[in-house]
Image (cartoon, rainbow over all chains, first blue to last red; front, top):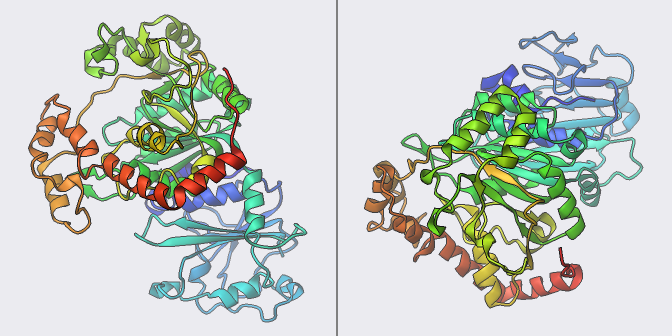
Length: 112
Length: 431
């Protein structure tokens, strides 16, 4: 998979990404050896981190979202299995999320 | 459902969270991730808020082993490369130097060589859109990090070692080198350098940074003011025009000079530290903590620090690492001409240090007797003595480093280094 460089992220949304290079670098390093797969990005800003990924956000911030949806509301309108889920800028914003209960992987899978 | 998950959250969240960060906590993260330990946990300094961090959590459910800690180390090791270049863009260099540096590598080195390289561009400018565009234009990844220093009168209080520390977790190379954007790799030199490092495995090695033009006296070996601009301009014009073949032939014939030190007949491992480019084994640096002694070091180049480590303090304890000189035909970088100012040393900067006496106490940065000469440098003075005193005199960054290093060696360091050499010592090899 092709991962956008911090410079490309910056060019997509300069004011937003001006101070976010460090964790984008770290994310790119972690994902370096992930094989090509179907990717879902939740709440990306400006552009997705992985080229060709599907995206889910409640408001389209400057580019076409695959799914326009409030991530706090389950279930999400996605289907099938993903090789990778990315949520770098949104997790702490999920106030009041209706999250699944239970600690079994199977239960988690039924929601997203 | 997903086979892998990558999220990031602010560190210490929700204890220090802002109002709009109220949505998730560790328990909820656990609910979403099957309550398994992350495969990788990575703390990253946040550039948005001072003294804060983000944590990246990564789960790979396709792996059989799911545990934190050692698994993270294993994964990080898998992602290693041969050399990490810490490329510094300071405020005095025009952004097109970044473009020249990166395009030179892209066009003068083979793709398989570039795959062995990591470039981390550290911008001491708060914004650098041209440099970012240059980084995005080359066919190899360039990590970009903005230094987070205080800016006084338009000039950052730069600290190379502090900036190095902030990006150290991103470094994947077995070897690390520090470059300025005005450095330019000769064609094929990167490949020869990587091969030499892989063969010899030095703790550290001195490279070969060449200036344009010929020196007539020893005192001219590093003086950009003393010539070399026409030759440098010829090369940069060819870079601008993308005439890469012509660059190779020009660099092979243009007048240039290396440090006068190299001209003496000396063994290749005499430990003399006279070079602006060096290569450091990250394994050795991590094991010894050699970069992190002596606190903050504003306006201090790293070369003095390494020289201090390798020659004076290290040798005093008979623990200086064996330092190789790289053969002249292996590593070749050229120093492109650039105007040289000393804009950092202003009255506003002097007052900024003076306004924080506790932070800078016992440092030369509070020496009122030095600042008039330093400020005269900003106005064009060529008197170097104030700089030398600022760095090497009482309270100077090099002096503080040496004192701290000596304390460390007297306590735990001597045993740690002895143990390291016993376990990981390398045989001296003739090269």
